Length: 638
Image (cartoon, rainbow, N blue to C red; front, side, top):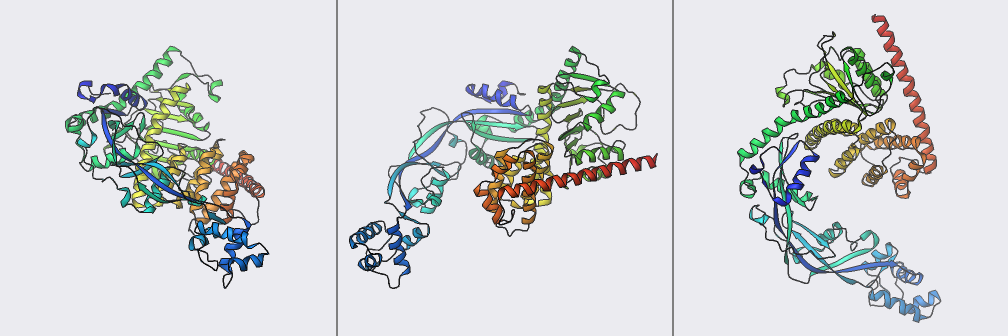
C-alpha cells in the first residue's frame, strides 16, 4: 500500500487478493506475498471398529447370572432356572462368546469386556474395518485423518521447506499408541471413534507407503500499524490456516525463517515500510474527517431547537462554538448502551463533579463508556500526562452490578476529537471534549454531528479496532500472570464493544473458568441495555457448566450470575429462556444447585423473572435517591 510496487515481492496472481486484504483494514500493509509449494504426507490406513447394541432380555439374564450367581451356573442349570429349552440358552451364550462377552468355558463366565458393556446396558457387535487416509503436516507436527485422499497438485513453485527450518518429524503410524491414534481420529471430526456412543476404534494400521502430496499455498508478510507488529500468514485459497500461521510466527521469532531469502525483504525495507504506515495513520483519520467536511458543505444543515431533542438520520450537521458544549451533553445523555470518546487531552476542569454525575447516571442505566486519549504515538511520549486524581474518579464509576462502567486508556497517535454514541451518532472536530483549558469564550471551534450510517460505522470500526487491540494486550498480560484482577479491564472492554463471544472464547481456550461469573456480569449488563439475545453464545456458555465440579471457590458467584442472566433473558423473552433450559442444561443446573433440586424449569424461570423485577425497582429507587441527593448538594453549593 505504501511502498512502491517495485519494492515489494508480490506474486502477480496475488495482487488482487493483497488489495482486498489492505482494503479491509487500512492499518495494515502486505509487504510481501508469494505462492509456494508445501508438502503434506499421506498414507492409506485401515481402522477396525467395534460398536455396541442394546442387549435383549435373555442376554441380560445370562450375563447377570454369570456376574451375580455364586457359583456361576452352567447353561443347562440356567435354562432350568428360567424354565427355557436349553437350546435357546446355548444359542445365546454361543453368540455372547463369539462377541467375547462370555469366555468359552463352563460354567458361564463373564469376561472383563463383558462386564464393561453390561454396565452400559449393551453388548459388542462383530468388529468391522474401514479404510481412511492419514495426513501428516510437517509444519505443525499434527496428524489428521480424512475419508477422501488429497489431490496432488503438480505445480512448479518454490518449496516452503527450502526457506523454513522445520524440526518436526513425520510420525510413523506404527510407532503411535492406540490412544494417540484414537484421539487424532476423534479430533478429525470423523464419526468412527465415539466412546460415549459405544463406538470404539480398536486398531489402526498403515496399508500403503507414505506418499508426498504437494499443495499450493500463499505466504504473506504483513505489517500491522496498530499493533506495531510484523507477522506472517499462510493462506489456502482465501482461508487463513491458523495453526500453520502460528507455527510460522514462532519460527520467525526463532530466526528459522529468512525473509531476505524468501521475499527479498531486508531489515531496511521492513523499517521503511513500518515508518510509512505509522506516519499514514493520522493521514487516514484526516481523510475520513475531510470527507465529512465535504459532505457538510454539499448539503449545509443548521441545527434548530427542534433538532436538539432528536437525531435526524442521514445528515451531517455543523456545530459551532456555543452550540457544541450543550449538544455534546445532549448526545451523551441520549446513549442507551455505548459511548466511545477519543480526546487528545483530558483534565479536571471538564471532569468535574457535574460531569462525573452525568457519567454515573449513564452507568446506572447500563451504558458502557470507552475513553481513549493521547496525541503521541507512544504513551511514554505523551506530553500531557493524565492527572491520577482524574483517572481514579473515572475508574470509580460503576454499574449497578459493580462493574467498572468506564474504561480509560492512553491509545495515542491521534489529535482528532471523536465521539460515537450507540453506533448511530458520530461527532468529530476540533473541540476538546475533555480539556477545555478553562476557556469558554467562542474561539472559532466547529464539530460535525454525523448520522449517515456508513460514515458512522467506518469511524466506529476504526476506534473499536483500536480498543480491541488494547484489550488483547491487557489480556495477554493478565494471562501471563494468571491474575484475575488484571483480566477485568480487557473483559470489560470486550463487553463494552459487544464482543462477549471473544471474551468467552478466551476463557474457554485458556481454561480460566473462574472468570465465568465476571463474564456473566458483562452479559447481564448488555441484556439490560439492549434487546439483543445471541442464543449461540448463551448455549456455548451453558455447555461449559459440565466442566465445573461444584467445589470451586467461585461457584456461588456462578450460581448467582446464571440466575440473574436467565431472569434478564426471561424478562425480555420468556420463551427464549425456557428453550435454553433443555434437558442437558437443566441437569447441570440441578447438579450445581443453580436451581433447587426439586424445581422445574418453568418455576425456576418464573422466580428469576420476579427477582429481576424486584432488583430493577430497587435500582430505580436508589438512582432516584442519588439524583435528588445530587440536586440538593448542587443547590447548597449555589
